[in-house]
Structures are given as C-alpha cells and as structure tokens.
Image (cartoon, rainbow, N blue to C red):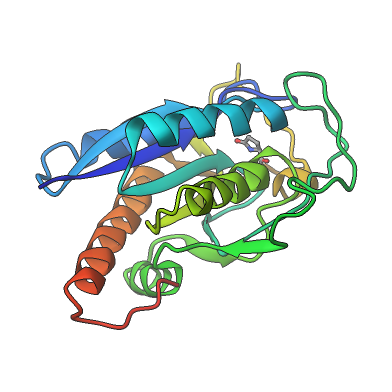
Length: 237
Ligand code: PCA
C-alpha cells in the first residue's frame, strides 16, 4: 500500500515576497507522482507561531500521514539544508504574519528542549553529496516559524503516539531553471529565520532543489520500510 507523505510549505513573510517552498512542494509531488510507493499531499502552513501550531494539529489528525517533510526558505544559504534539530524556542526580530514578535519564548513551556529529525539526514546527505548535489546538514533551523513548525510536528506526533519519519528542509532562494531570479521577487535574509545575512543572495535552480528533496523522500521511504522489516539498523540521521 502506498505511504502517504505530507509535505508542508509556506507563503510570503516579511522580507520574502514569494516563498519558493510552494513551488518545490508542487514539483516534488510531480516528480514522485508516478511512484506507486508514495502518495504525496501538499499543504501550506501559515507563517504564524500560533496559526501554524493550530494548522498542523488539524492536518496531522485529518491526513494521518506516514511521513512528514516540512519545507521553508532560508535566504542566503547556498545549499539545500537537511535540518537535524528543532529547539523549544521562538525568538526573532521579525514579526510573524499575525504581527506577533516573540523573544526568547518557549514554544511549549513544559515541552522537551529539542527534537531530532527522524529523516535519514546523514545517509541521504552522504549519498547526494557523493553525486555532486548541493546539500548540507544544518544544526540550526533558526528560531522563527520554520523551527517552530519543525518542533511542533514532532511534539504533536509524539502526543498522538505516532512514530513516523518527520523532519525539515530549508531551501535556498531559487531561480527558474537557469534564468536569473524574477526581478519582482524580493528576498531579505534574516538570521533568525535560518538565513545568511549579506549582500548576495545565492540561488539554486528550482529543478535541482526539487530533485534533492525527492531523493530525500525516496531515502526516507526506503529507510522506513527496511526498519519495519528489520533489514537494517539505520538510525535515521
Ligand atoms: N522561512 C522562515 C519561515 C517561513 C520560511 O519559509 C524560517 O526559516 O523560519
């Protein structure tokens, strides 16, 4: 039976007029459309601390996915970043889309301090880097809404008693194939949002980003089905 993969993405937020994670989510779904092993469901999550928690609670209950991959943009990074850890902290200079600013606030006051990705981060990184793709492992998803979503997916799944692969990927700003990026799109890097602040905003072609994310999905499904049949001890990252 096909596994259901939930891919979440974001829309615009302060400094980012068009969020490339939406295009990536759709392209990954297209790339994987012919694969019988997986059914991809894509959903936008609001760039809002409170709103994202509520939306995730509903979608994880309604969709009951077998794996969750969340996508967001980190402007200024030049590689696709497989995030390793989500921390229990909201703290950013920029507002969320509800106009809320949080500084040094716990996401959940009595919650765990951190959750690790349960995607096969290390194995997939090694494999994809080995074939020359622009990937990296990242040890901070920032302290803005992306980290919040990464944390909340794990917290909600834990509360629901569901042990499924889940994790977060930050993508760089993108460009359509090899064209320069659209002049209408503005990108401002924010360190709190996982960005690298500076003059230059590096971009990767959309198709390359989608391919990398699709490969991570394939590795995740493989690692998960092997684990279930006891063929390997792959620890998932
Ligand atoms: N990036 C922001 C939030 C939404 C997005 O795509 C972040 O890294 O927190």
